[in-house]
Image 1 (cartoon, rainbow, N blue to C red):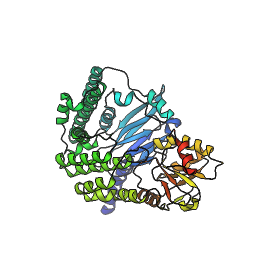
Image 2: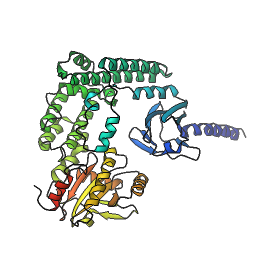
Image 3: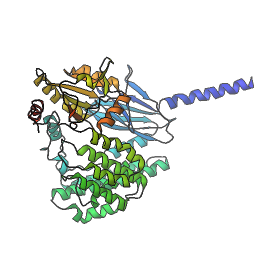
Image 4: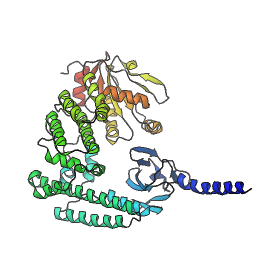
Length: 479
């Protein structure tokens, strides 16, 4: 009897603990319009919210000993932080008032969430380099949206003052956090983010005044405050180690020859960076950016063999192995080579092979529903599908790499595109990525009727010269 009573008490204790662990986050959104497309982003992991009739959804995945920040993507309203921790429950309520989205926190770790709310909003309120010139944007809709989002026209003096006021407010929020260990982490995060913002604003002012940033003493003093071997600097929106490397480069990533830039970058990293985590993060980012930038769309020159030889000598073997498929695919997936015969599924789940569609030119669009630039290209694909609908020489084919099959199906069922639509499962996605060397989307490929590659990195549907270039290809007059 005594043992039974002890067991019951233990079971009751366990029962009381389980609900808390099973509901680390409760999200309440009464407005059905705001519920559309809500996504939780947990450090690279995506979870789509499924609300009940009361507009509630709970998140319970994983174990977190310390308060952990996550982001809530509320449709087109924006991104909002929350904090999860095992054994603790935070409630986030999202409402729309007078056209504005309001987020309220209750329960545990409220101070942590409010810190992140201020921290994620910390940034310069003036950016002339990216805020005032949209002449290089090809997509009209993106230009219009960018014009609407222009930063407020204020003086640099006022921009620095506003940044200082935000910094002071965030420091107060960090100091209100009860957990001393987390408080110290937040204070360091704030210090580093503030430094990154000062660098961004100082660089922007120098750019607007047509001054060489390397000759700016204030900027140099700020750069000197960076420890390029501190891994915490990598977690920022503006990577401090990256800013440090950029300052010490003698070449530019905007140069026509990306090979020289890549070799210079590796040299500077070798000189200044010894921490393995920072070093490999920088080199990994460098290679990925160069592979994405050196395509037919950019027209930049890049000797991948010369760069790769230098990269292999400096990078960690795991980083080299991770990126080797891109180098191999760039050497193999070239114009005139036999096309990799990848497989994929239609919306009913039927499997298809790319070779099933050989016999005409194929314009392939690799995309995903979560990719904004991908979705921005869809109206242009629709336009060209309609234009070429009676031309037997060409067909259009879209391949989604969405891991969320339902998101892809909903998008297809809603848009009702009049061209071939397919999705890759996890294994097919891996094969497609490796064989084509896909490092970023959207990606466009053109296949010849005989199943050989015509353009491994083709021009976008939004390209103003799309029709001229496509006509030249399908009529055999392309150079």
